[in-house]
Amino acid sequence: MCSVSYQRIHANEVEEAQLKSCYSSALSLCMEKNIRSVAFPSLGTRGHRFPLDEASKVGVMAIIGMLKEKGDAFDRVVLCTHNGKDTEVVKKTLEECLKEVE
Image (cartoon, rainbow, N blue to C red; front, side, top):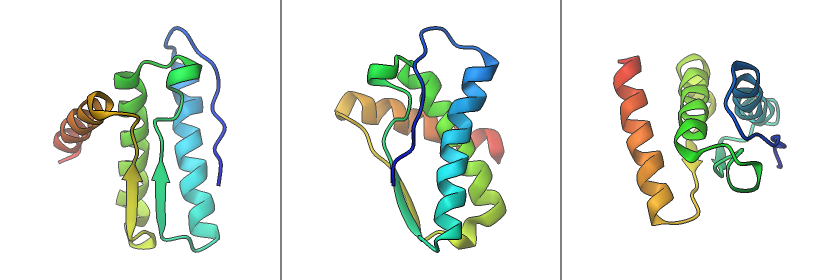
């Protein structure tokens, strides 16, 4: 499955909503097709120039929101990164977002 994001240089609410929609749409499609495990790259980053820390927060919050509603539909959701530095950013973002929703 492929999710298409968009090109961005500066953050705004519309573009964050579009990025969130990429994650939500992919998760919804997985549920429709009974796909129980899914892996996401850092959508919107790299060539699309969405800063990793911002993109991570949008993606993680979208995933958490869907899992809170439909968590029983998934066995595993994986966040993939390009390198160790990116992994640390995503890990920190995940920890912060989980604290926010507790």
